[in-house]
Amino acid sequence: MAKKLYVGGLPWKTTDDELRAHFEAAGEVASASVIVDRVTQRSKGFGFIEMVNDADADKAISMFHDQDFGGRRLTVNVARPKEDRPARRDW
Image (cartoon, rainbow, N blue to C red; front, side, top):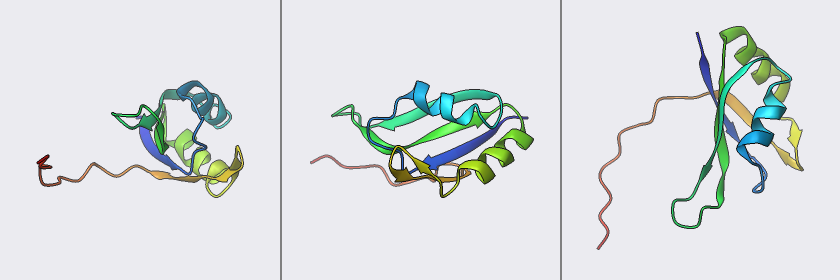
């Protein structure tokens, strides 16, 4: 079963492909996405990795959490479900 990981502390220039390539050292990656701002299309400095199996996900956490990537320290942990937030009002 696939496990989704949160990856924080990404260098601003990181692409989906670079993120995927980095995490493939831990095992097979099902998907990789860097989250970007809707307006500016610039990276928000975090993303998500989906590993094909739980063992590879656990290996990725142990390999990459608190390690340097492009000059920044990564935060890698199991992603939590998105919390419901009140609707934004744009006045």
